[in-house]
Length: 257
Picture 1: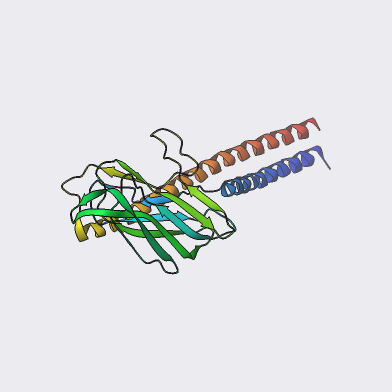
Picture 2 (picture 1 turned 90 degrees about the vertical axis):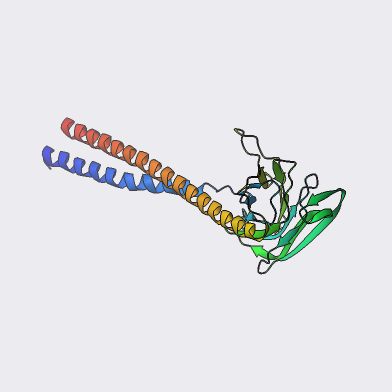
């Protein structure tokens, strides 16, 4: 074989190696990204409402973070230092809800008069949240308190394998990293003239919940797309550079031959 033919063969092989290396690198990067587990917490949807508002609808969103077990029980503990007068639970197919109340040392004043007992705990049992899924447990709250800016609902999530995840950590302050298992938190804002009460507020709360869930999903999807695009661009450029260097080395070896 002539020197010219040998150099041509090496060049072709170098180009082919570069073409194979780029898709392989992209595939490897994709596997790494897909292997990163998603982090999801038990939350209140929506996560804010006007202080003192009544008949507001909220959902405790419970994701299943296990790869092998199903969530079979959810206990939500209501704050007793800033009590909520009442709660109406929406029926969730397959689940049974039990509402417990506790007697208050000091009655709270509501639009319907003084209340001596407040909700202390709601427990859902009988159903299952499979791996990779979540469930919304919807509750219509009675009048919200006015003496605090934040309500925390400590939650216990029980799995079919006996594991209990305790969502009870105090939420982090602004600018600080979140704890491993933050309690679902409802922020109370100053009441405004536009704040809804009575039956119309239930519709408002439900609409806000849907909008919040859609916004969160869209934001997460957009962030993931940008990360994938950025990694793909970097890996692609790296593959081109390595392929070019391989071609240059092949050409030099052919010249030396």
